[in-house]
Length: 183
Image (cartoon, rainbow, N blue to C red; front, side, top):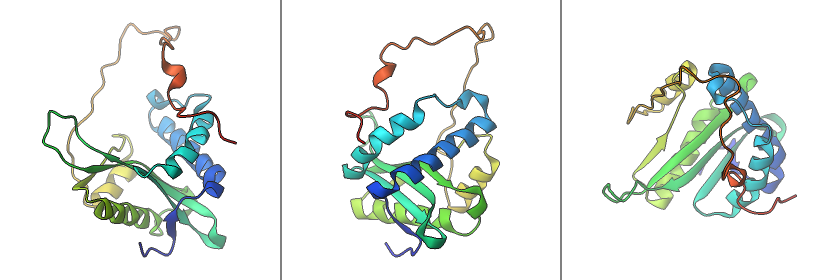
């Protein structure tokens, strides 16, 4: 990897990247209120961060700005399709975020190049990713990165759903926690 502003994340990045991740979630919620952020989202992310750093199937890349301060990040993981499809190796680019005041300076593109290098290193055939339909700037960025549509996710909202309807929390307490909280 030869991108001067991008490196693989380290434990010392946990707080800064966690805060940027929360900014990403809040920006998504601003685009579509169906993407509301859970109260404990950051706790869950902080808990899993050390595990992701050690897992060879996950990568977190950090873009550094002035004074080596993180200004963006990308998370990616090795992925394969369900067994009903022909075997292939893919990398799923889960998140890419660059702080608003540092956008359009090449950090996002460098993060994508770092993920592309990792894809080559692990022998994957492609990168898979998602972008919100309401995120016009994000869609334009991915088009500039030569991403092409593969599928379209749709939703049907319940017309009779009210504000008092609460989803069952059965089993959800474990989602986002891969091990005991690491401090």
